[in-house]
Image (cartoon, rainbow, N blue to C red):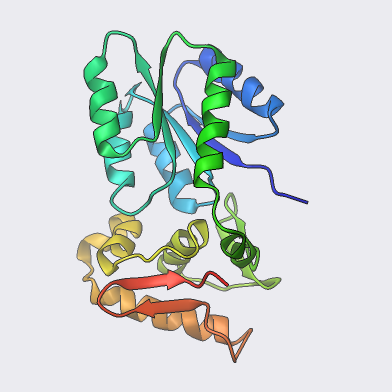
Length: 227
């Protein structure tokens, strides 16, 4: 059975959020709704999201700034919700790496159609989808299991592995993985990532001694194997 796509919705107006949750849910999607950037950013760091919808104007900041930070370490598809008068927001959003935008006021059915179109375009190859199935990510509980065995991870190890599991097959540089550590990264150096990778590999090999799902791409960084 195919897992339904998980959509992160960042929208501070409850009425708009309710209509989008209903429209997307009717299309078989699971929606995580957040009204503040701080909550949405924590959910994104935890992983397990297939696409994000960001409103541009929010009580605790700008959806564009969140998109800028996200693009430092992730290619997660993002759809922007913008005000009709703010053409500059749409232009800047696309330049920052947004996949699409919808102008307010909008039809919830249009948003659902745009989301389906983006997901279809970015759908990973079958080999990558099989690889991701080896890991089970409990986002709310901040737990990751490998081949049915729950991993005992430090906060840093969890954050790094969550990035890998969210995008198997993608090569991440040390700087990108360090950025995923958030506040803990301020006093760290890029080589610290090598230490976390080493400890992660040791814990994974306890389960599959003959396999190493974390690949080293010399001169580039690390990736979760795609098969």
